[in-house]
Image (tube, rainbow, N blue to C red; front, top):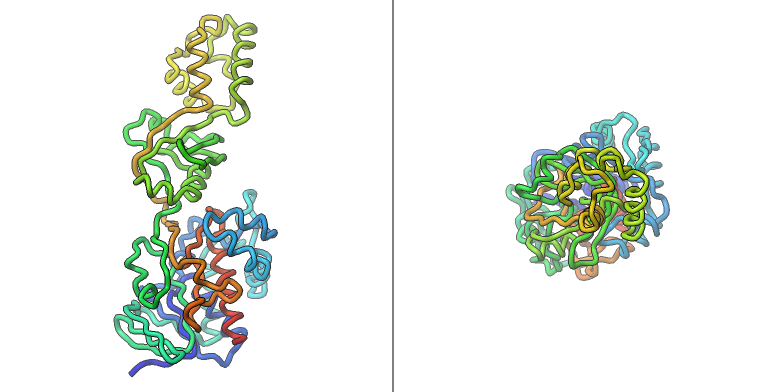
Length: 407
């Protein structure tokens, strides 16, 4: 016998649970269930922000907010006018959960614990009598006569409306239960990772962080911000942002590519050469290591000088023109060859998923199948780090919930 519900939500992650709570809040008469393939709900909420849960970001202007989304920015502009960070702050506040803004704009619960958010959601699910049915991996969905028949690994369900909030997958085959309905899927690729530099000498400087500009050679992609040298390569906000914007380009390169680092973003070539000539005149008798007045960490400074074939003991007066040219090029356009990628911590993000042109972003309903809705990372939407992926989940989930409850 099939279990019958008005609405079934596939996926007990942030988007799925938030959608379910809001549907039931808008329309308490509806009979709703969430089905989840694993034995745990809200697993990504638990690990987000190092276990503190980066709920959203303090960017309250939709036109500015969409700039943090490499994919989905145009589609999210309208939805963000209806539900944005200020709204999720109010939503949690009404539930007794206060959020705080950190210096970089990220927002966390004042408790600094993701369990606060998880407990809030579970409390709402219990209050509204919304069950989560675990170990229900969807194998097949049939749509006919304005209803959906769902076959899972252990059960069968029937519902009038279906909301898919499964999050992103790493392989296109994992979207088969959606694509078999005739929904177009953009092949998934990782969009948040660090750059590997196998056997590069710079790896000896692991732990050093400094602000840079970084550009992918032979491409339009460049970013600025802090760069962190790790024991495997390059990480930090500048690299992670770059990996997001260039995700598909890097995938096409099979993650083997060249990039250039500008260690002195505030200088151009002419300004730097003028500075060097001035130092040669004013500090000719001094060792270059004792008068290298740039905001570059000391160990990195030594590494870059050696790369330019300049000894630290060399005096400014003794540096020849070729050495200064080499040093200028290395400081402003230091080239590295990357091979491979490394996923950033546990917060794997992928681009790809349900094709955005197949979805009505005023309702989050499929344009092809009436009664089928999508929310969260199952869509071909992804964002930079900082709470933006969760905000897309809250926004798309809220709009889906409002549309369903009003229909």
